[in-house]
Each structure stands twice: as structure tokens, then as C-alpha cells.
Amino acid sequence: MSRPTEAAGRTGRPPRRLPGAYAGADAAFGARLVLVVAATAMAAVPFALALVLVVSRWAPLYRLDQATAERLHATALGHPGWVRVLQFLTGVVWDPVTMRLLVAALVIWLAARRAWRLAAWAAVTAVASGLIGLLVKTMVERSRPSLPDPVAHAPGFSFPSGHAMTATTSCAVFLLVLLPLVPRAWRPLPWALALISVVGVGYTRVALGVHWVSDVVGGWLLGLALVTATALVFEVWRADTGRSRTPVTEGLEPELTAPDPEAPRTGRRTP
Image (tube, rainbow, N blue to C red; front, side, top):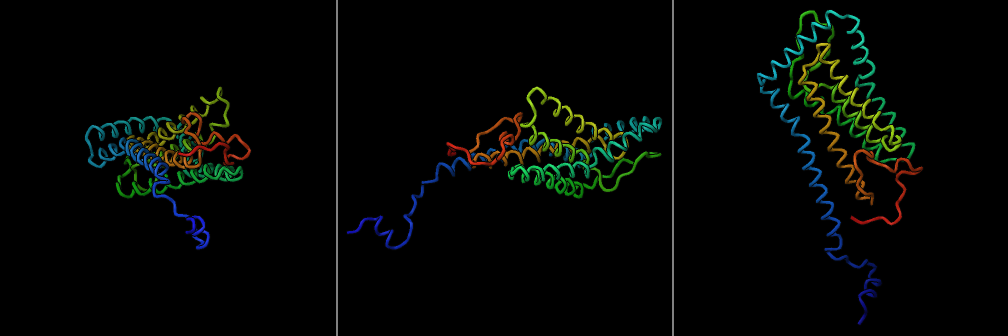
């Protein structure tokens, strides 16, 4: 009677793997996916609440939006020089086109460094931000503020603010990608610059009378939910390549400081 290995060699078929050979790895991957879905859902709750309040025309929110718009509009009418500064910031410095071009340049740089995972993550996050923001605008169809003697105009619907959402996702992409390259003593600086950009662009949109306050907050919340989702998926991707989890303060890929960020690691762990 021939041995099983000899029979397999004669038939040319590889030995059949046991059904439970990868049960541990599959279970770990499934657990990570469940955690990703749960965390993403939790991150989306604040935006969902804001969306419900806007769609239902909640009276306290309407009064807040109206009062803030009128107060800032009165300030803008009395300070034309300040209006020009705001228009430059929102139309050039923090314009969505500017932000997306910067992210595109980052993607090209990452590809040149052979950091393919990070390049894919940054590109997907930026593209998804634009598409999801446009989709939600089209679904909600909220009108922009209508003020006497407007100092600025903007096309399209109002909720959520595309400027605010793009600034949030773009600044998050830069932070999570580039933090490993910044010395620890200097890391508060990029965080501060990102916060100033995100808050600043939101202020310009409300101060120029082209968005309600709730539009800007909705853009911030939707951007954060999107980045949370894509970053968690990236963590699952890293885990499947044998990389360990890293705190957000270290960036998504600390190995970016290495000449070849995606080189196989020795002593790779199995999930």
C-alpha cells in the first residue's frame, strides 16, 4: 500500500489543507473588520445627528444659523478690506482645488518613495471626500444664505460645506502621512497648522455669507467620519502585512522614514 504523500505525488495534486488551517487568521481578520465597522459607525453618529437636525429644520439650529450669518454679514459690510482677505484665503489658500492638488502631489511623492499603501490610502480618501460631499449636497438640497447686499457668491447647494470637508480630510491626510518625518519636538506645529486651516476655512465661509454655521460643522463631522473609516481600513491592511498597530500620534506608517517603507519585515508575526 502506497503512502499518502506518494499517492499525491503520482496524481500531481497538492495535499488538501485541513479546513481549520486558517481559522485563527480568518477569525482575527473578521474581528478587525467588525471593529472597523463599529468604530466607523460611532464616528458617523455626530454627522448623522447634524444631518437630521438640518433636514428637520430644528428651530434652535435655524436661529443660531440666522443670527450668526446676520452678525458676520454686518461686520463684512463694514470692513471691505477684511472681506478681500477672506476671499483670498477661501478662494486660493484653502480652496478645495488647492487642497486636492496638494494631496495629489503628496500621492506622487509617496509613489516615488515606493510607499504604495499610503499613496493608495491618500488618493482614495481625497477622491471619496469629493464624491461623498457632492452626493450628500445633492440629497439634502439645502439653500445657501440669502443676505441683503451679499459680499460673495457660491454655486450649488449648502450642506455640508465642501470647503470645510475638503480641508478636514486633506489636513488629516497630511498629518497621518507626514508625522513620522517630523521630529517629536516639532509635532505640535503641524497639528496647530491643521487646526488653524480647518477652523479658518470654516470661518471664511460663514463670514462671507455663503454657508450657514451648521453647513461648516456638517463638513467637519463628515470629513472626520470619512478619515476615521479609511484610516481604520488602512490599519487592517497593515495588520495583514505583519505590521504592528501604531498610535495616531505616530502617523499611519511610521516605516515611512525607512528607504523602502514596504520592505518585508524579518520575524513577521501572524495575526
